[in-house]
Image 1: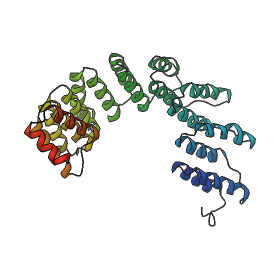
Image 2: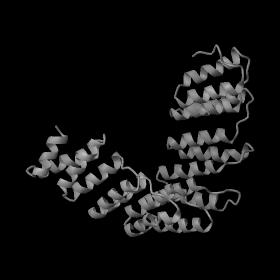
Image 3: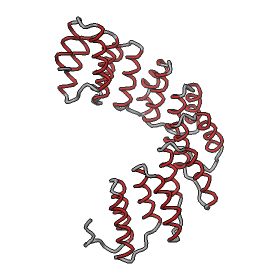
Image 4: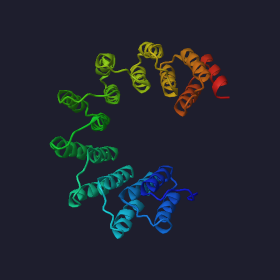
Length: 322
């Protein structure tokens, strides 16, 4: 680490600690702090240690981040802020240790700190990530919806809609979506994509199609993720013509398909015995620099085992599996 030309300024050091932390170079981040103290006589502040703790959490070393708060910061008289706790709460949720995250969440008021919407969103997502949808819904209703000081945002909505749909509470998700619209919150394309995906995967294709078709009326353009979700939904229901038409439409509208889009439609053709169409699309996919993913290759191998004499499949094996 070259420290010769570093200006003796806490802000400058903090930028370095943050950069090293985000790159996973924790030893270098620790060296910067040591250099600040020993060589430059600078005093690290809460921003310094937040950056270091964030670096630990990015590496999955959440207990080291907690130790930084409970030992180093307290020993040096550095008062944590809400971001300090948000970093730890997020770290424990990602490690699926939601109860530990909730303990920290409950500690905030005792420290004279106020949780932010990011704090609440992280806990909500943590509950859903660990399959605790009952607690997630209770937390949302009691701690978030009834909290008049809290302003829900699009991230909140996306987390809730995704969690509800994943757990098959589609009616509840639609009800919340309507409530959100009535409250004046303007959904972005991410929220619509989440709901479209959830509806289509839970047997509500027509509702998903309606939402998708009405996106232009909301001033929104579907992105590649949204298009791919609808293509997957059509393929799942055996509506290959609709899936292919949408595939052609997305490119005509200026949204280029990616490797996920291609593989999704190719598998749709496979599952519906449209082997020639799958072959044409695989040629096009490879010409664009994409390749078959593991799921597509596995599907093709399974088909070859069960229908070894199909000439279209044999041609695909020769092209793509040899």
